[in-house]
Image 1 (cartoon, one colour):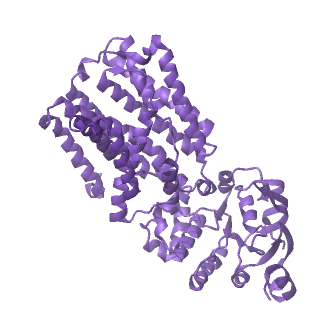
Image 2 (cartoon, rainbow over the protein chains, first blue to last red; image 1 turned 45 degrees about the vertical axis):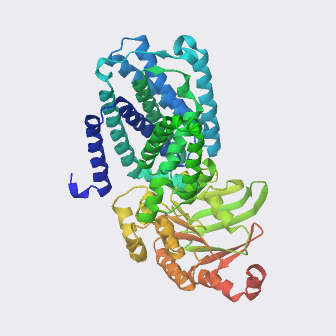
Length: 332
Length: 237
């Protein structure tokens, strides 16, 4: 491989990744490491959403269902079998396979129709999974949930940190490669003008279903990591709030940029942590969600393309396309 | 010697939603020629092209391409049979660069398509110049050139071009028409054009569409002489 052919931005990302590998040796506090782990996990989750919304123009209101599938599959596997690596791997495989099947079925059923059918069906299915998790107590532990033990190898927070960081890096570069490939360009064409893409000879439905499956599988993997970091699962992993959170992370960071959703995840997680921590100073900070909403409104007004999108527009003249504008108006 | 017909429409009818737009469209596109669809605004010319492309399905009648029925096929299937389409709004992908727009349109990248791409870039040097520029930042004329190049790069036997001169400055129109003229030697074209002067320069034969029906046809040279017909259907005196 010719090193000169590697883009400058790739070198920057590699440098940031290397820096992040050093962080746990400098920042040893468990709470800060936990926040960084959550950022990595939600960064992965938000990137999976970005592949759908930012690159393909598909809106999902129930993306959390894949996250929940990942969380429960792993937790149940580790709970029912010994807390060993094979049990964990079994949980991961189950998580990915179930998410792939569900996203494939949802995609085939709805993506040939207008985009809101996908949004509505995912919302309904996420609700169904939530109810199933609440009612099927023998399997899920209901609302109370259950705790489980982790394999020795990933029990301490530092190993979890590296696991999540490596996953984030692999998924980021994998998705970056995918979106820059001819396949990714077709997805972007679909986002911008579905009919035109079809009249160029592409079977649009196939591409949309593949995007839906890849996105579902990655979201499910984020659920796996999330549950590993908590060692506890309950029905909150199917809550609609999480879809809203991930939607905001993607929009705040920059739709269709991949790095934006990671930055969005960082901002939201840090904001959550610091604003909640200020509750001793003033009662308003207990209701941090109010401030969070204000920040979101300000970002939408002043950074309509998200933080990364706006920077790209200023520096490289990135255009706001019809497709993205439409999606913005649909989701905001 | 009789020229073989590449595309044939017989008594085609089509709706947009609940509105009956095409009542009786019948015409033939001979191989190697430029056939022009003429008519006033709202006559049904664009709908005819969209119906051929499958974007607006025909409710009645027959559409055959290379003697095979295509009226029930999906747009991607029709495109893969060898029909390229340049829509009225050009359909440029604004966030993709010029190069990406062209590559997305290339179903395969082999010697033939690469040669066609090179030829198209020679024809439209602006596209080469702005290769890495997002399609959304091109001027109207450049977008039109990109749309035509994109339809041309594949080995399409037939190009459907919808109003390529629409909204362009006269000097750019001239350039676009010149390029279509050059393309004419390499492929068959079905052109919808309001600009009669331009259409008459590059067209071999014409069909006039009025109120969703084909009402007249003939050789382009004959139409130029028929002032009555031109006034009646095209409003040109």
